[in-house]
Length: 230
Figure (cartoon, rainbow, N blue to C red):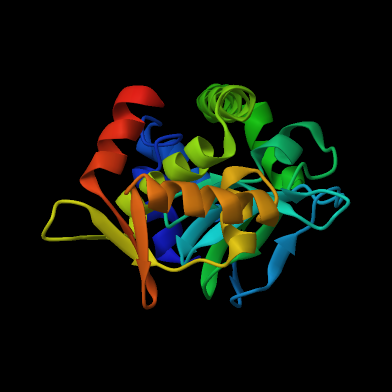
C-alpha cells in the first residue's frame, strides 16, 4: 500500500474527523494508478464506479455540449477526491475527468467500498458531507450562469484562477499564463465568440490587459468581483 494514501486521507476534509482506525482500514482497500497529462480517467456517461483521491498532479472535471464546447466544473489537486456519486449509486459518470498534469491517484472500487460501509456506517456519514458541498457549488454555478453576463462570469473565473495559481504583481493585482479562448469559454460557460467580445470589454474597463504570454488582472477587478459578484 502507498503510504501517501493514508497521509492524504488524514488531510482530506471528508475523512479527517474519522477515528484513525477507520482511516487505516480505508487506506488498505485503495490501489494506486498513474495517469499522464491529457489522459482521461473516465468520460461523462461511462459506467465506471471507482472513487479517487489525488496523490500527485492536477486534474479537471468538465462536461461537453453537442458543439464540442466544454464547461469546467472543478479542478482537483492533491488531497481532493472525485467519483463519489457513482461510488454511491453505481450510475454512469456525470462528467469527464482529465489529467492536466502527470498525476498519481489512489483508487477505491465500489465493491470494496460497499463492504466497508456494511461494517462502518461512520464513513458513510462523513462522505455525505462532500456530496452536500458539491451540490452547493453546483447551485452557485447555476446562479452565476443565470444572473451574470459573460464578461462578469469570465472576470470572476479569471480572478478565481489567479488566486489559485497566479502570481502577485507589484501593483497589487495578479498575472496568469494566457489561456486559449476555448479554455476561457470553458471557465465562463460560454462560447468562444462571446469570450472574445468579453475579453475586449474587460480590457476596455481596465480590469485586464494582455502582454506577452500573460494576462494581467488589476486590483480593481478583484475588488469588483468581491463587491459586485459575490
